[in-house]
Image 1 (cartoon, rainbow, N blue to C red):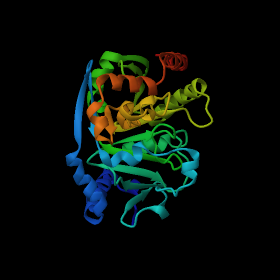
Image 2: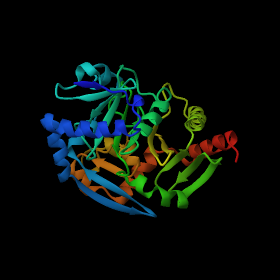
Image 3: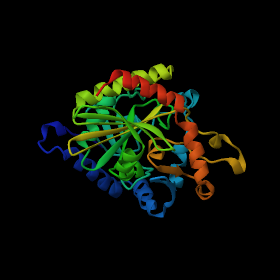
Length: 331
């Protein structure tokens, strides 16, 4: 059952966030598979690795094997039914329909609260065509949730169907650690009282943070960045990136992780050298998902550094983005 909701007509700005939370509670009662997988999160194991001023967690979660090992080649995508299209949803799956999207509970969760927000129409993953909606949802769900977006070649298991995901706010390590990281590792690019842009290199990741009280300014600055990415990485589809977006105390906070490759060489290695890790936004925010016990047990701090070095952009490309953003904005 899909419930049509129109939170824009309700004076309580947290209305949709509360409805989303209630949806998960209801689905646990009505959908045995989903309820079992959320109960199994209590069995998930975690290891923590220390870095200079921050931590990275590694989670063993066998239910994520389908996502981590998903075949996202054009042939595979064209040969299967889209699992995010309304007509292909499981009979037990309910959802909230709003703003041309469906809010759905993720039946194979990473987090105690995990949602997929899918466009009603079947259309490709594209941040250029949906960034404003990402900001809108991060605002409407901001009481409880952070939104994230995986590009079509950056961890999205349904690159043919536009979607975001949502998780409980501050559950990803980077969210909790960001204030310390930005103080230690960032370079300010732009600040005007409403909007701030920082480039961050923490020795593991190179990423950009956008913080703004003004939605129009945030849209404008993001598209300047996107155009710079297109020049640096001229591809047929969008430049590779993962994004998170949250809203709190009247401020949007967006992290953008430019990418170099989809999967590291360890993913394709054989036998003892293989690590079946396919990093996406969650991993880049400091929670690496391992669906196999052997990978969880053998991964090292050095492996994490090497994997992140492979999947994120080079120092040369990051300097190019720094230059382009510096040319576009002045203090």
